[in-house]
Length: 244
Image 1 (cartoon, one colour):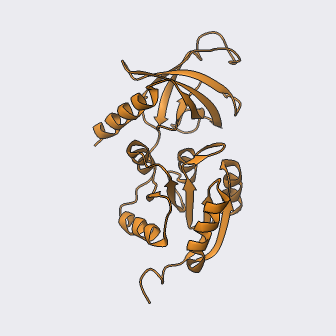
Image 2 (spheres, one colour):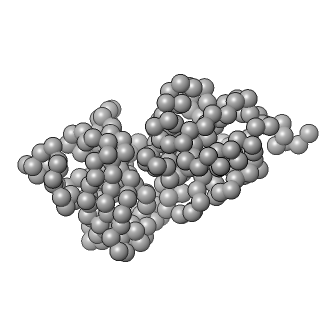
Image 3 (cartoon, one colour):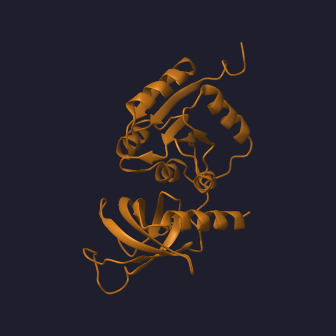
């Protein structure tokens, strides 16, 4: 019996909007798992996590219909307490995105299609190196200026410039002065102190303020002005490199 064949997971959650991919991953994991649960989007994934607190592994696609796997990662990897191992799956590997995911406790960032050997290799590589997921950055990464204030809860200026507390090339977490409804579209100019990128974003989750963590909204980037995606990627890579 090989070391790989001896490894078993009690309960695994697979999150991907492709039914074919869910079936493939289920087939890969079935010989090594007690139970496999699947979800097709963020909403169903959250329900499954709430219903199954004893998950041992979560495999999640980066891009989902109603949000980002990076947003789910922050929810599934709390700063303390028991938590499942989380791995992200992607069809397009982005170095800045992977760096952001690892900052938040992911144990694997896997290119599709994945194999059981990929999963075990990621677990073995992370063994003994796991740390608690960091709190949101004390200093903001930059500011997101709202270019269209239509529909905002207030017009007194407090919504005009929002601090960016976390970001990847697919979305961001914005500190806000109040809640915003999920689904709200935001026309943003992201300012890094000289470099600017314009994006159209959609709110995918809302977070109430908690101990040391600001309230705000998670947004998924939907459309980029020409050249803006490249600006985001370059600036984010530079920031993460500066953190060492």
